[in-house]
Image 1: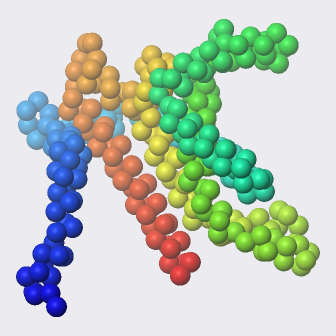
Image 2 (image 1 turned 90 degrees about the vertical axis):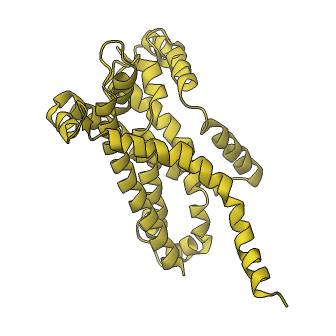
Length: 283
């Protein structure tokens, strides 16, 4: 039988392994967030809310938030719909094909940033291969990859693999017998999905949607590489304020970053609530 001292040592010893993680997390996560939060209230050397007032009084800054939210919401919705159809189809194919598709999806989920922007420029740029082909056959007159719609296409592209990886485990909760039972009762396929499948999948779908929104709001490298910083989204505005050639306003950038963190924190809280609700519902 272990003595009380041995029991305490056995209980606390695993916690020692957390110390390197806690140090790393504090130095590279908490400390920068604390610095950003503190400096967001500093204006001309004084403690003030002026930085936040400047953000909300600037139509240019608000446009950056609006553009970021527009891209995030639409890319999340379209990416989620495509991923849902894809994952539903994967459950009907051979296991080897399914494993190959998941492996490919896992690889493409990391294909973001400058490489994906360069790839789309080659394919859909002004002189891109697909663009020239579509123009040759008169299918399109003009397509601007370097604007709002071009960014939306790229955002949708990198949202789909992430959505597939997040939704794939959730579809294991569907029982094939449910659809057979619904068909025997006279339900059509769309009725089965509307009344049975989607209610079961709704926590996972909503949770995935929220994560996709957060993923798109924080995107920077792809948009900057594609537009050279000429399209107004909030991450580009933050970068221009801390690394611009003319005016450096790190405190204003800190205020914008705090607002972005607040949006992402709100989204994360909703996601955690949905996950907890789904877990308790299954129990």
